[in-house]
Image: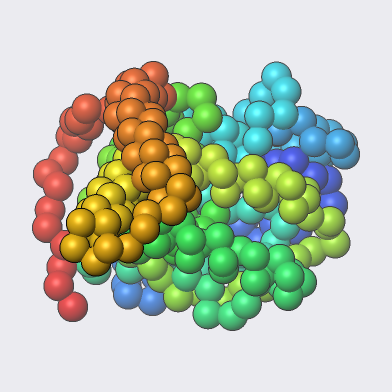
Length: 321
């Protein structure tokens, strides 16, 4: 019997939470997945992230009505990722599922994701929607573009396929919640401590009667935070650009000298100016890149990136398909 904790960060859930928890309620009795694995939802953690509506009273009513529902009260609005980590810290299940409050994600898919994790011996399973998200075309296009940039810039194909509907090994979820520092993107933290990640195909539903809590500015902020906290690869671009500028200065110098000495070509004043600008701008960028590397190491320490994580059970190799 696999015990599953569900963590739901709540920002504007006054109108959607009752329906979602009602859908989860049957899962609190013993269930069998399509792959014949037994599981039960042992608790639902509703993390109140201090949104503009009266989600607080809705959470109180739900916790009174359903004994499996538990409230986690935050002192102010910290954002979805911080709220999710707060819920993970309080979870007690063998597995932790994170999902949104808007009803897009179907709790019935938890069994499929659990099968996916157990069959392939995975530590982290992301939902992989087979249909487009029920947003406007512009938001979907920008989301896909941001994930593509993240994948290419950061050199990690998995980073571009994250989703807020996740199934995480319970120990890893609780350890991450203990180590993760302020400003760390949740999925980046998960990549720090997991080695076997999978993506389970699921079908997204339409949102319930609830406006999105994310403006384009907030979504850009999430994207920028992802870039800053993933690693040092973006910083190394500064060093590479510096080396390329210095090489360009050397090539132009050699070309100008060759033309002057052997081709009797008069060297114009712009050539020396271009050489000086390219060389010294390259030197400056190289120096900044080296400094940025040291800052990146410091950033990794300050953010609480763990050196290792000790588990009470063996980490088994992934099952090859």
